[in-house]
Length: 57
Length: 188
Image (tube, rainbow over all chains, first blue to last red; front, side, top):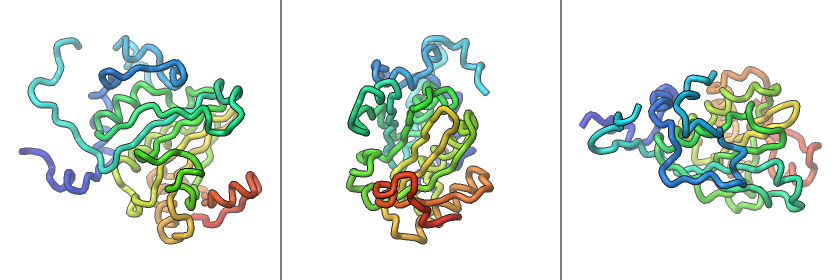
């Protein structure tokens, strides 16, 4: 296996390592529903349109 | 992009702790009398991948409405003074001008979930308070009287954020008793 076993044991991840995943996980977890009481916290169209993904920072 | 899903087994990267995002809705808050009554857990995540799935779809602090509070706390710890794990704790706070906390909020989350603090066991979670003229981020800890652990967390946090100004630590007990007049017990 190419998994870093020492990282798995301690489960410590540096900022740079974590940032490698930012573009790989763009959609909300399956079965997750944005209910009205938390809707204000969410970006409305990101999950339904990939067009907006480049519109950050 | 369709049809490009990863094939085969899904390798994910487990976190040391599970964490829960909480949101306090500013419009609901105005209608509620009891503090904390409008806080809602959003989602509990336990892998690097789940974290980004949520984070990428959630507004950054600069885009949240004034009055909003966004929390990321260890699973099973409620972001309230009354929570038994938080009751004897306190918080470090970093202040920002309006719209300037986004990067520090992300770096705070990454340092916590990546277990980058030497005294990470002492940490309950973090909160960003968005107000009309400013934003502030706090890290809540468990045992405020454990000075060495608090100082270590405060120093490391400033390093991760590259924050140069002095920051203060306030015991929850003091905040409860004196509200805004509560004094810093530690500074770094």
